[in-house]
Amino acid sequence: MTVRKRLTEHGILPGDIPTGQMLERIVRVDHAGEYGAVRIYKGQLSVLGNSPVGDTIREMAEQEREHLETFDNLIAERRVRPTALMPVWHVAGYALGAATAMMGERAAMACTAAIEEVIDDHYAQQAALLGDDEAELRDTIEKFREDELEHRDTALEHDAELAPGYEILSTAIKKGSRLAIWLSQRV
Image 1 (cartoon, rainbow, N blue to C red):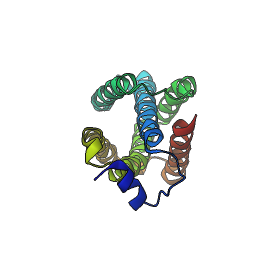
Image 2 (cartoon, helix red, strand yellow):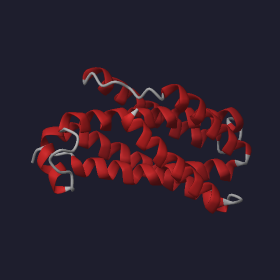
Image 3 (cartoon, rainbow, N blue to C red):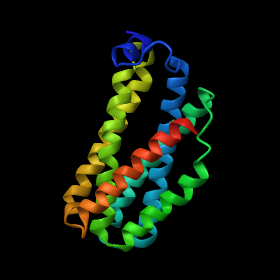
Image 4 (cartoon, helix red, strand yellow):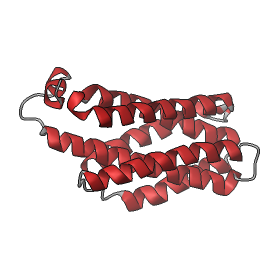
């Protein structure tokens, strides 16, 4: 099944953005997201690098660096313009990581859990749109989705839900993540 047929089945109608532009948006936003994840973990490690959870954060950060490398290559291969917001995500990602880490290990894990929950939905929607003509991209997204779910589960195992103000923190981070996704697709 082609991407165009899958898009039509998922409520995207003639007159909506063309398939090529949709694919560019997918690569652009996923590149931005993986870059942001690397920056968040860098911020967390600047505060918690020597703590008991430091090695866990380093492991997740390494996977995110591998994801980013893949999307760096896709950006170049497919000649997709990265989001113009990369400088914002550079600062915002690091700041979010460092700020939540300063609130404690549980808050840092709450940050990870919230973001990965949003990314799970995001990647699932993208994978559903991609047909056999984009099987390699779909497989990459599905593999990375599995990694992100693993990060969420790791964060929950490290008492993310016991962070002070967990519901408020989680809700704010999820809303910010959804906004970053929307902006990175378009800007």
